[in-house]
Length: 424
Image 1 (spheres, one colour):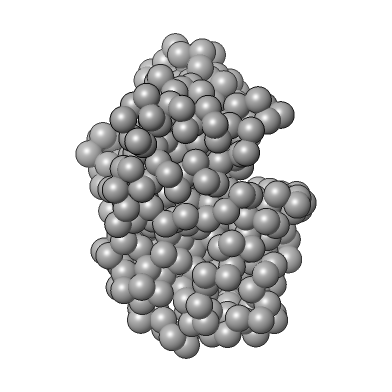
Image 2: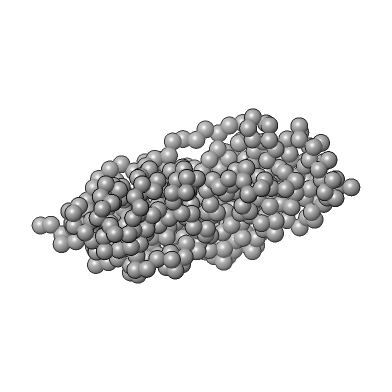
């Protein structure tokens, strides 16, 4: 017998057309089939805004093809980046941990659309690889879900009971998997500076990319590491298998790996299936600086595109042009500052465009957006070294940053520093 909540595509469209604000889950929580219905039937809506932080697929509504549908991005992936540069979508500034609250303020009676695991014997669906901002709305807003047997049934505060679901549709398709990102020599060098400063028993926040992958690869001899991170990755999975991650020295969620979403390989998603050592929580908990700060020896590893003599880090813009948004960086950068023995690492390659541009600059490029302020920056790392800016004067910061800049730019940077009165 068909579940009374199960609807066909026409019924789903009719239901969604009653709403003006749709909150879309991110990553593998993105319900591809439901979003395709919206994209292929724009005439079903008088006016619609779709709110999302990380799109996984390009769609006509993202590119502003329909005057009655507007896409609002909270962190641009490549598709939204193109649309934003063309003035076709909106970018909403935010700290990721505040996104649930912000969504409550800027939407009116929203509906949540997401992808879930099949229902269990107790009537619960799991958000699987997600909790993000979606989990915050469980019991607070109606859900329209796409049930997919490929979604793992994860553990945490990301369960939706059938009674909280307004409508569902079944559609099975493989989850998005990230290709393996190779570790280059430059990544390895930066990672070495970071790994040697990570103590046994530390709690880590790591992301994706060559540098985070290289750092994780250097931690196989560490003991009793913990995880409190925005994103669960394959590297974390591998450290668990090696016995490096136990979480026994954590202060919050002891012996649990805390995350708000996961993105990686199918092996990672299988690892999450009914894994009680993982706690998937809403981003307003995982990324809350006040909760992060409760972890002793908290380590945050993030990247930037440009640093100036003040220590300001422009991580959302490239040469003054918007590229992404704030994401987790400010959340964890603030959290580690208040954590006992906390350490925050900001990484960047020393140059761009085949060594023609220094990423360490006297002042940020015009139009740049500061993600980590001069007051919150801790360590800065390039392939030429690592320096701690926290507790250092502008004079000291300038001198230390020049020392880890690419050698071909050091004389030029020194000249500018003297001209600005930052060096004598």
